[in-house]
Image 1: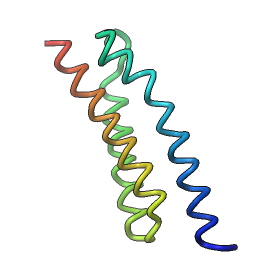
Image 2: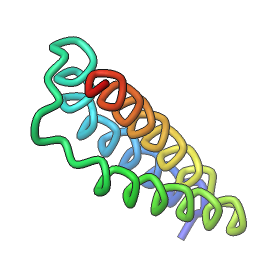
Image 3: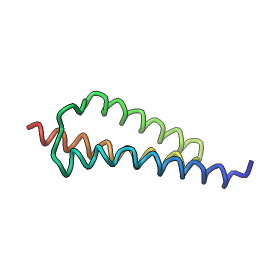
Image 4: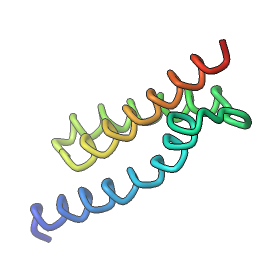
Length: 87
């Protein structure tokens, strides 16, 4: 199958996956609600996203790199805001 087509599907999936984090980011960042957010889970997810990013880099899959880097940034922002709200 054409590599460009496969990478395009990966980018599309990654962009759609990014939208999954937007409600949580909005709830924590704008509404300043952090109850029920489990930081341990977010740390595990951020570790997994980092490993997926490295995997995508090693495989030259920029779709995997892009989606996991962007998701990782969102998770880090959520972690940062939750920690600052819990002080």
